[in-house]
Image (cartoon, rainbow, N blue to C red):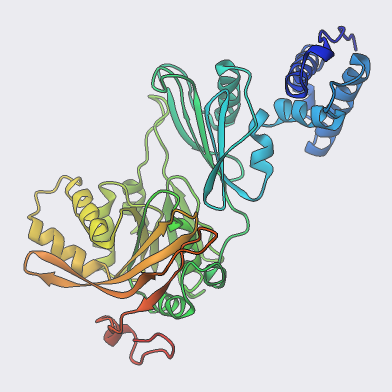
Length: 430
């Protein structure tokens, strides 16, 4: 391999600048000299070993590394640049990091334990971010250019990724990745981390087993999908489940599961398949339960219809700040279906379809908590009735800034308990 001299005056550079310059030099040399197509044809383990050997050869010819920089650091960075997602690959490999956000070449943030931190990772320039974004969407068959400057997709490991290019993103291309957790939480885990109490967990598990229709409400990153996945464990193995998502995030442990994923329209030749299309089709698939990952639009009408016509025990999530706001959002989304229904009829359908609304929140200390478990009672005049079965009682903040509190039973026995739960379970406090 022909190696050019290492064009860096090491004494004039600090460790960070020296490392970046060396990584750029080695990367450019590898791109020029290595047959990347042949490299990609190798098995994953052999591919990495072959690439690291080539990088080591370039480093050996370049001489000493800058002060404070190890050869291992350079090998890892160049390998990530060639085979991975460049400067953010290390963050993606960190199991404690849940989200990665690239705002600009010198602005990279990540979330750990619900709290945002600024990363030391840096991109060379906006074109560098663009190359990594192209690498993300290329295997997905998605377009990413000025005519299609926004892409919402899923990585091979299930992580969700959103890319926005200029001129929509004014200053720089942006990349947002929400990592897919492989160590999924169950109800016991949620109790252990303080998201809810054992009494509330027992109540919810029994509600799922007895086919209560549940809507989980909360903001972005509040833990809606995590709670939905945990609740799904209480669904009996004997039932057929159809899940509908955009993109797929829920992982069920039951065997009899059919997973459907909505498909965007990428080109004129590719027909869009919406969640509403999938929901209508799911009704013909003999489901015992339907799990809609997130209700976002007109599919809310079909979901309410399904819950009211024999698909009890169905579940979904919605973005809202309170149980009352969640019902209002569902009402607005039903109106988006285009049917000229009176408001009273829509609210009556919602009151009949839904049994529980669970409100979850991400608190300022980064913790995710169940704030309320509310029963949807009946139409009271022109308003859908709600009553809290459990509510979060906030205590004094701890010295470490952690928010203290607990989810307490209100003592109200839900109306649906008479139909689904003949006798209260000990420990609910109901």
